[in-house]
Length: 116
Image (cartoon, rainbow, N blue to C red; front, side, top):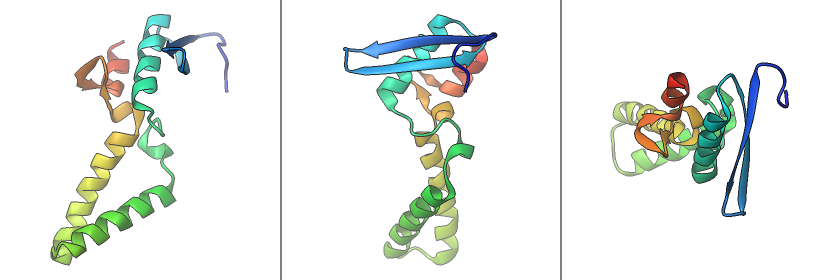
């Protein structure tokens, strides 16, 4: 991993001297790094993008959601569609790029990065 090489920008955000976040971006500026660091400090996303989520994490969540839906008496053919929808929602919640941006909840972090 790079640490501030050519073409990258590094910035930091410290929240109340308790939580510190370092951000490195390809392109962008220090202000963008600070905004992203603030979001990460507030939301603590465990993954950057859905592709980073290990299969075992998804399998475990899928099993929990399936069990819950079946216990509620839903038919098996509906359970599968329900679970896939809830998995999409779960990924949005745990992945940085799909989370609603803390400074503007009308856009995702991914969209914020695209716009800046």
